[in-house]
Amino acid sequence: MFKELYKYREFLKTSVKKEFRGKYKKSFLGVLWSFLNPLCQLLIYALVFPFILRVDVENYTMFLIVALIPWNFFNMTLLQSAASIVANGGIIKKVYFPRIILPISVVTSNLISFLITFIIVLVALLLSGIGIASSIFMLPVILLIQYIFQLGIAFIASSITVYVRDIEYIINLLTMLLFYMCPIAYSADMIPDRLAPIFNLNPLLHIINYYREILYYQRIPDVSGILTLLLVAVIFLVSGYLIFKKCEKRFAEEL
Image 1 (cartoon, one colour):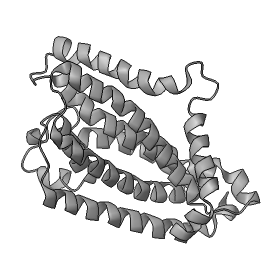
Image 2 (cartoon, rainbow, N blue to C red; image 1 turned 90 degrees about the horizontal axis):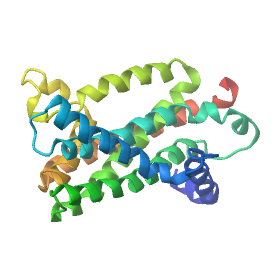
Image 3 (cartoon, rainbow, N blue to C red; image 1 turned 90 degrees about the vertical axis):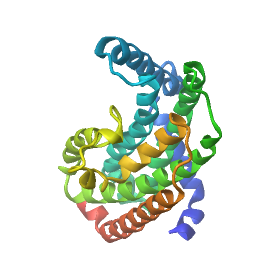
Image 4 (cartoon, helix red, strand yellow; image 1 turned 30 degrees about the vertical axis):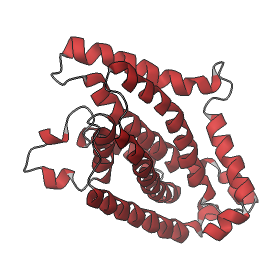
C-alpha cells in the first residue's frame, strides 16, 4: 500500500486538494467557513445550554465543544468517505490509480478542516479562563489515533457502499445513534454501570474522552489506555484495508 501511495503521491496530493477545495467551491467566503461554522456552533451552545437549559456543569460550553469538534470530524469523514468510490465511478472506469487514494483523500481533507477548526477551540479555551495546559502535548497522539481509526472506517464504508447502496442511509441512522452513545453532551461518569461495558466497546467514546481529559480537565491520559486504543485503531486500519482490497476487484463492474 505504502509503495503504491508513494508512486502516486502527486495524484494523492491533488485528490486531497480537490476534496478540500470542493467543500467551498463557488462559495463567497471559501475556507473562512471552516472558522465560521464552529464559531457559530460555539455561540449557539454558549447561549442555549448554560442560560436556557441551565445545565449544571462548570463552563459547560467548553465541556461540550471540546468533545463536539472531534465528533464532527468523525461524522463528516464517515458520511463523505462512504460515497467516495461511488461518486468517482466515472474516473475509476477510465483510469488506473490506487482506488484507496479516494477514501484517504476524504479523511485527510477533513483532517485539514479539523485542524483549522481547532484554532477556534484553542482561542475559546483561552477566553473561557480554562487556558491551555502542558497536557496539550498529548493532543497529537490522540489525533493520530483518531486519524488511523477513521481511515479504517473509511476503507470499510467506501468499499461496501459500492455493493450495497443502502449503506449510506444506514450510516445516517448509525451516526445519530453513535452521537448519543458518545459522551458529548454528557460526562462518561453518567453512563449507568450496567450499560458501561456496552458503551466502552465504542472506540470513539474513548477518543472523545481523551480530548476532554486533555483540553477541559487538563490531565494527561493513562498511557496504557492510549496504547490499547492505538492497537484498536491499527486493527481497524488493517481490517479496513483488507476488506477494501477484497472488494476493490469488482469496483468497475459494480459501478
